[in-house]
Image 1 (cartoon, rainbow, N blue to C red):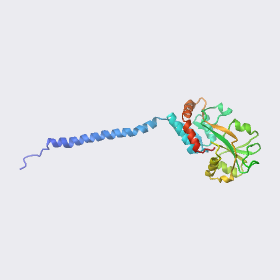
Image 2: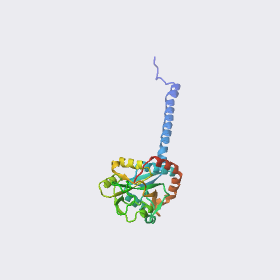
Image 3: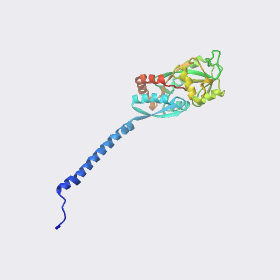
Length: 266
């Protein structure tokens, strides 16, 4: 005979609702901690300084990206990379909008820009469709229509060795300039290549979609050109040049290893 409401034993309350609540609180704490730990990398990334870097669109992107990654790691920053024509790289650096990759020093530029130490040295090469008396591309360019990337400066050594140059400054990446050469717009196309391995330069020509057998490469570089990063003199990004120099010095070994395997043309 049921005389009144059935009472839940105290033990059932402790073992049931109370324990379930405790378990829920523990799970909540664990989820909170896990979420916090998951945010740590994102917060650390957000706190990194983002530095704008203008890079010539005609350069070998994977090679340049690898070098910039090395420098960013050494400096503890992130790059905001813009790939633009070389003339635009120069303008962005001069206006203080960004650092400029691949801008070599010259007397005219020194009035407006500060430069990092050299990251590496490129050879300046002549490409042609015909050949000279040696069976290669010309080594003396006087009197020849010579195509170069707009805004490019190949250094004092190059200009001193080739007085009387008839330069035709052209837009476009490496492939576009090769097509201009084949179309007869110029007698010689001047490019830079990071080492003296001609097989790598010919491979680069082939990868640009041009039959490398149609292009004649000089037997030796016309000159050497050092590769730097430039910043507006007196501008905000100019303060980063000493840090860049320290990073370049720290990562010289890694950069040398990249140079031994990569290809870069401009």
